Image 1 (cartoon, rainbow, N blue to C red):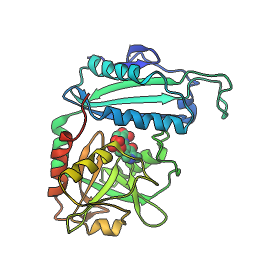
Image 2: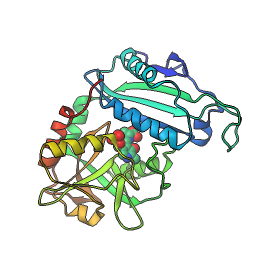
Image 3: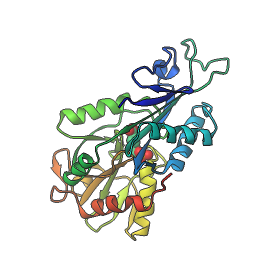
Length: 285
Ligand code: PDD
């Protein structure tokens, strides 16, 4: 089945869809994106993702490409046309098309919007979660505005590849103070030996993950203890459990960090429980 993308006003076969070579996203990575999980043909936590999208756009002074309710219609239509029951929807907004010049375009240009959707393999993801993933740690080398979900992801891409080359799946950045910030494409968590669920505060150095924010509701409802504070790789090596969160993985157990086995080297009960319970607390639309 051919895949359909929404590209600047039209639904197109992805093999034929294209964007202008002077799109500022292409030339300057001047744009933002969102990734939402699709589950049971529904979009998970779309309102929170759209709120974050608006914030990212606002920080970069890029206008919304269309009213929010129209954007919701487009997103649902792309999911429907691609017949995705389980997978992800990706949306990207860039500043638009203008002759290459670092300054913002003088004349108002329309922000460019692309929406795609694709299926993921549910069984494969469940299997990965059942065995857990490996993580490496690397020095933080991104710009300080990682709170903006920008499409400028070169350090993240290099970090992910470095993880893969080391036989791991994710890389955790470590800041100048020696604390883990977040993963290259996920937020980082540990569980202490006395059962506290710990992640860094979202006010500095990380993206405020939507999965992260929903998970804090899950943790509160399950009456687990939540601690929002930074942690070091050394603390993580000795933690009872570790895991990462992202829309495409929800809660993914981590079983090794820099080749140190976490806990007994298998996914821990807290991460597994949070993964099982997560969708009871998310909004479907
Ligand atoms: N990544 N931190 C970074 C750097 C991320 O790229 C992501 C998401 C997260 C988790 O955010 P959320 O829970 O809202 O997905 C944290 C997406 C899935 C991606 O780039 O594919």
